[in-house]
Structures are given as C-alpha cells and as structure tokens.
Image 1: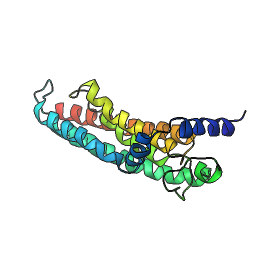
Image 2 (image 1 turned 180 degrees about the horizontal axis):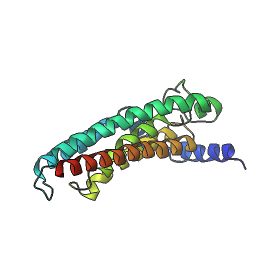
Image 3 (image 1 turned 90 degrees about the vertical axis):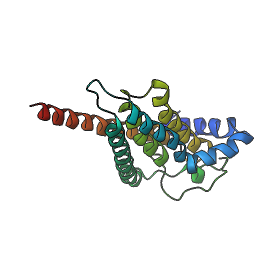
Image 4 (image 1 turned 135 degrees about the vertical axis):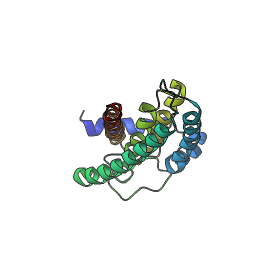
Length: 197
C-alpha cells in the first residue's frame, strides 16, 4: 500500500466515519471563521500583560504586543510559503480526485499541499503558546494550539485536504512560528544585554 492510497483511506475514514449533524454545522464554521475564536485569548493575554510583572518589576504588556506582532508576521510568512509549495507540489485536491468524497462546502480551485488553514493557524498559534509562558498559565497557552488543531481537522472533515496536506501544514506552520519566536528572543536578549552595559 503506497502513501497516496493510505492517505485516501484515512481521509475517507475521517470524512465519512465522523459524519454527524453537529460537525456538519461546526466544521464549516471552524474552517471559515474559526480564527475569530482566538480573540478571547488575545484579550486575556493583553489583560494579563497589563497586570503581571516580571522579576525586574516590568509589566508584560510590551511582550504581549510583540508576541501578537510575531504571530501576525509568522502567519504572513506561512501564507507566502504555502503559495510557493502549492505551486511546486501541484497536488490535486481530494474533492476533485475522489468520487466518493463527502463534500459539504465548495471545493477550492487551488492545489492541495500543504493545507493553508493548517500552516497559517499553527504559524499564528505557536508564538502565542511559546512567548507567553512567563505570564499565562499552561491551560490558557494551550488554547491557540487546540483551536489551530480543530481548524486543521475541519479541512479533513470537509474533504478538501488529504491528511498529509494537513500534517505538512501543521509542521511547516509550527516551524515558522517557532523560528520567528526564537529569533525575537535572541534579538531581545542581545538588546537587553546592550542596555545593561
């Protein structure tokens, strides 16, 4: 059994096997407007940034603003990477290649690999998880990652991506988000050390 065959079988298992009325309403909404559900997290993040202080007595508000900027930058870079890879991979979407797919939304005209929703969601979510660990609890920090995972899963339920498209998007988005987060920390640490001198 080759990867394409396994990919197709797993997709059909999810696409048909998890079918229910609630998901038929929830998954299209998550896919198209799920990003709005990150707003409560962002509001809480800024609220905690205003009230919490680090060991030097400084508030985390500037850190919260920088985290948001890094997340937006990562999502932008992810969108660019998605466009480049999609054209290079030129993989036909399952909703155009599989006759038995259960399609409850419009089949996009673009190529399939990687999932744009997965790469952008995780590129945005990873900085929110990684850069807020000093002033947010673990439960709150998991929220963006869980939301990104649900958005990524919705693309399988809707039948518009193969599982490997989504996994590639999750991996690439996470790496972009993590790389920019670490770069921000390195630059921030160097700037802090310069000020101390």
